[in-house]
Length: 635
Figure 1 (cartoon, one colour):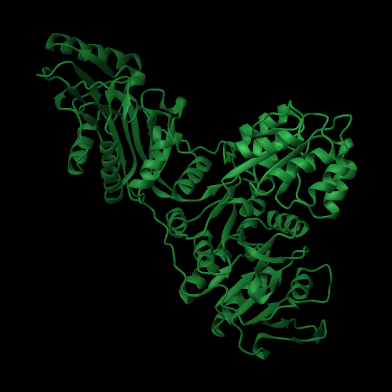
Figure 2: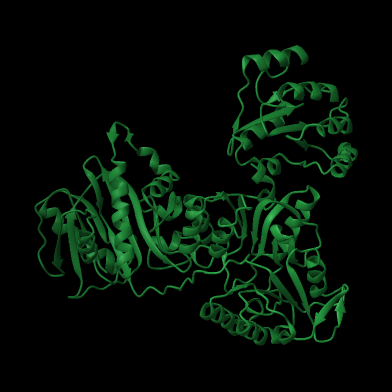
């Protein structure tokens, strides 16, 4: 769509634009409002300013006529020849601060809005944010606040700018984008001044939106009583052996299926599905070529949950088989987890249907992971520190059961208090955001893939600046997820979610200052009151820092650490204790004292000097770090 056509559409949705007039190629131009702007109005020109197709600050009709001729000359220099189908558009010049408002139909999040600072350098400066078309006023406000340009509100350099009007404009833009066949749209610039907000230059690419159907789930994945494990085996190197062994202690009824065995772990083994009693859940760990046939048979038997461990589907090019799994799940109203996944865990039934090696402790974290390898690593680390889970879901290829389903499922599980997600890609963006919005439980999200995967689109600025990672992270955060920047923080940080204040205890000022900067991105440092300072004065050298971070000086002994901790131990659930290797520092003795304080998190900034201290902390399963950056990421 050309600019004048776009203006008519903007009128329909109450988005203001300048007064304008169209002229044919050979028609004499004249206008009654100055200063004005003249632009080429042609499908032959994508970015007008790049080819000299725009002239601004025209003060009279004589200059307007000259400007038209100059544009024609500029276009010829770029080998653009105009004909009778081409036009010029003249419009009043509106001055103010240049904003950008665009939209792109994304394959994941569908209609997605891009807002930020406008102008010719929008792609370079990239002071932008993302807004979902389903975002309410509160979310829109949060998105705007993520940009630097938001600092102009409510007043900048003596001029007032109407934030409420901007939000109203964005809400109108949301309606237009959802209701019309728009694939991409640019309003650049969107001028804001003391009189209002005006779409000064706008372009639209129309087309049919290809939307994927999201299928809601009617059955709980964890409504489990009777489980059959297909591929259970006595061969210790096989996945089916590990799953069968892990499932033995469950409160659910567990059945093993293998056509070649009679018993396994002193339990009867069924040779076929037909021999089984009624089951509600099946775990499939058999060769890929038999999986579809097995799934179809299970559906006929009324099974509602199918966990496919077997690999060899989309990840290896077998797309057709995976699409068939999706179709079967949809048509038969069942849950299919995987394929190519690690399995699931359900604490209420002590049901471990994974082939992970680590012991799983019961807890309150619902862990969702797209990667089986990352999941086993997290489970292993959690086991070391006795961090427990209420549920674990390995997503695998997500042929059917996806992140939106998993979030909704865990939201309905009383034993789950925190939802932690490791994601590599999202399939149904709108449903994913809706699930986050509706969650009554905190959602922690770590996504892999920070490399530059920005889309390339010749048509618009929006297409060029809409990047996969940034879009997913911003939209998820605005919807309510807490973005984490390390996978370990998915299991470490749930303990500290509700704690607002942090104390830093250190024997070195520099590291304390660095950690302060890192911590301040997530939490506040506790301000010490007079009474606490007086108590610390009584036990610390007079040169201690007298504030938080509490620097107890480089010659601090284990006793000095202990004395300080006795004063501050009840003031915060998070006490970072930094230990640097000074000559008089007995790291092992300090570590031994720290074992008595559950809310302390040691940070050992060294290597050789801390070998015995690390062994002691490891032996006692005490969480510690060797890096300030890694320690701060748990917040």
